View (cartoon, rainbow, N blue to C red):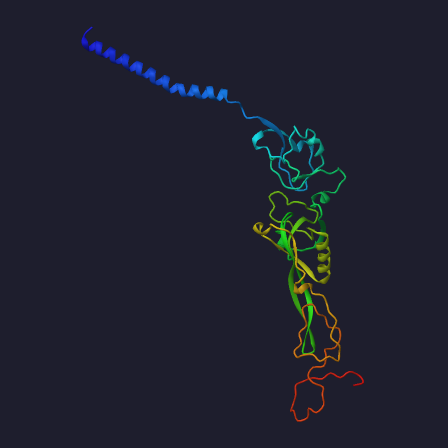
Length: 305
């Protein structure tokens, strides 16, 4: 074997040894990773009660709609139904009512569902404890053309005719004021949720959630005039419901002044004031006004004067 052949063979051997060393070094990290993965214990899991399909607001819960699944223990909230703490939760929630819409795989909480009997009212389950459900009449014009849906927040506006007196003459004018703000809508007619893929929900009544005191105020406003709903943005839907009784439209009628009391001209009553008798005498009724020239004053004389 000559020198050239020996050099070729030696180079081949060196290349083979280098390739072997490189391949062994590349495989070592993978083996180390596998060994580390085998040595690291899998995170412990707990069983959580979740929705097995999409659930709509007001829907009755059936046994096939919920079920237990494994959930990482570290991300399990205390508000979840855990099988270790409530093994009979799936049976206890049968015939319960969904208060907050849920999607498939979403864990159930006591804020999202209400446990009631099979014969109990669905609406009674949806009403927040301490609140009341009351209904008002609506139409497309007073309810934003059907764009108001259950669980939306609205303001309630009162529009009514009021009487004012100007220069002894009574005249009517329309007054409109917001009387309740940030009111939760529970239902439109008997619908507790919108139909799938529907953007509007037309109806002739709207059921809203109010405190007992505010429900009384709403009934009074309904008697005073016409009610309409204005839809609030989701960004403005936070906070409690507010009643505004100091508005002009909620002013109550007051007795007219005595007939003998002079009134200024022109005389404008406060909002809500209703006059039931003639306006008081305008101008001066004293004698000795001769020579004062023509006057545009009008005097009203009652019988016997």
